[in-house]
Amino acid sequence: NTTLAGRGGDSVGDQSLALRTVNVRKGAVGLMMLHGLDTLDNAIAMDNECSKYEWDKGWSYLYGADDNSPSPGKNAPFTVAYKRDNDFTASGGIDVMGGYLPNLFRQGHAALASDPRDLDAAQEASDAIKRLLTITFVRAGIKYSKKIIGTDGETGAF
Image (cartoon, rainbow, N blue to C red; front, side):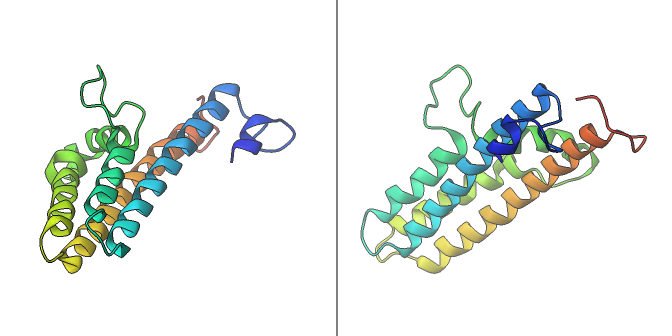
């Protein structure tokens, strides 16, 4: 919550400026992800040829719109998925970005671009994308709770 992150006097406001800054940034990334997922629902609900373009907006919110930038996706939820994959796949976890997520976006686009539109396939892709992003943000919660709590159960240095 940006209000709590920005002022003192409560448990979040009493945290360091670094932690509060991270909270605001993570919140913004979360909002981008939620909006991107909302566009997938909108795309499936549309009854016209624009639905595939609405679907692609979902990828833009997740990945970032500019593949030609020096760091594509740097400030987008894509980066969170990529980083948490690196943290968790060494122990046999699901590699969210290693093909699954991009391929599901392609599957949903193809389903909405087909004539007639395959709404069941688009919904299947949307549901799978949501499950994978849930994995991503549970991983992020685990990682950051360890940073805040610390391995000894005390408040960690952030």
